[in-house]
Every structure is written in C-alpha cells, then in structure tokens.
Length: 136
Image (cartoon, rainbow, N blue to C red):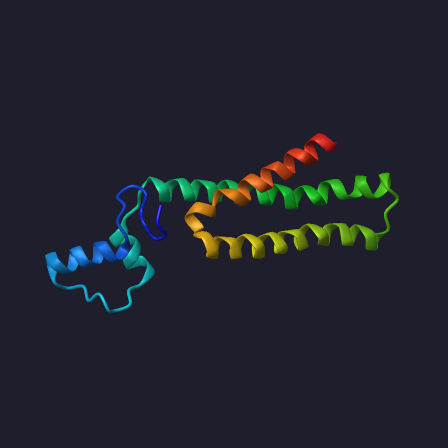
C-alpha cells in the first residue's frame, strides 16, 4: 500500500480535497489544512480502527511492563543480593531499551512507511516477552 493511502478506499487526502474542490469549489489545494480537516476529508476506515486498537493494546502492554517492575524489583533484589544502585540501574535499563527501540523503529518507519512498519515493533515486543516468560 502506498504511503498516505487509506486501505478502505485507496484515496489520499489530496484526492478527497481535489474531489471536494471540484464539487464545492471551496477547497484550495495549495492551502494548509488542519489535521482535523484532513481526518474529516479522508474519513475513518477499517485501517484507522485497526491501528487505533493496536496502539491501545501496545500502550496497555507497556503500562503493565512498567508497573510490574515495581512489584518484582524487591524480590529480585533480595534473590540476587542487589544494592539500591543496582536496582536503579536495572529499572533504568528498561527505559533505556525503550528509548533505543523508539528511535530505531521511528527511523525504520520514516524510511519504509509507517503503515507498513506499524506491526513490526509489536511483534518484536511480544517475542521479547515470550522469551522472558520462557526464561522464568
């Protein structure tokens, strides 16, 4: 799918604006439009709903991961005799990994198109979680 195309109708915002301009005569193709106007022109299709659901699930999974660190850290600290500094480093490493992942997938998404890359980080994240689950 080409970047900027809606999976349902295959129309870009420019296509819709051009059609509106021909029908109504009130849209100037050279003017900048607001994000709200662009969304109203393109519409909400199955791809947008699917993407929203994936983002919600990804956000929930990330929240569970971050919150579980606070629950697990005291037990891990006792089990492995970690100092407070080592516990802090362990907690910080999670966020450092998130930073590297966001930067990496952002660059990949910019290069190859966000719509085609959106599932790859979720897949990578789920594989990492399955590996962690198997290891315990």
